[in-house]
Image 1 (tube, one colour):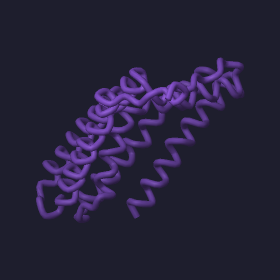
Image 2 (image 1 turned 180 degrees about the vertical axis):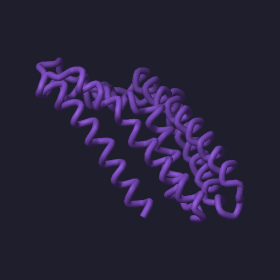
Image 3 (image 1 turned 120 degrees about the vertical axis):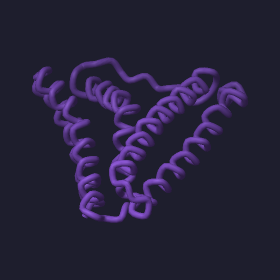
Image 4 (image 1 turned 90 degrees about the vertical axis):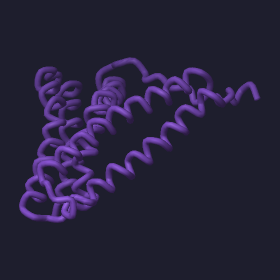
Length: 180
């Protein structure tokens, strides 16, 4: 049941984003658009509350429960960036905004972008792991919350791999394909 709620929350998140952008650029209601965009984190908080209630009612944690904490971390670290990305494209398409820049996929700028992405991932991981730890402490049953430990461990591994990949572009930058 919680898995379906996660799907519904993800859909809800993007509905708020889309509704906010439509209100802002199609109907020229900037305050309503801003309000709808600000509501997007509320969806993630509802998901987290549902996961905690499910666990408090005796459910054994699964990776699905851990995803709630991951969503909060990702929203904190990447939410503004994701909304800004969508806003720029929506402004171009519907609001006579400037054409979105195409980012380079090579050189020092690309390496910097990859490192910055990893720093955001680190922030998401810190927030998510703190939330996972808080849930584990709140439930206070290691057997029931073992999957949350596993989620944190797996995410730590993913963060490490992401570090290696992201920082490899600093050591071995991609070359401009037009010059090779």
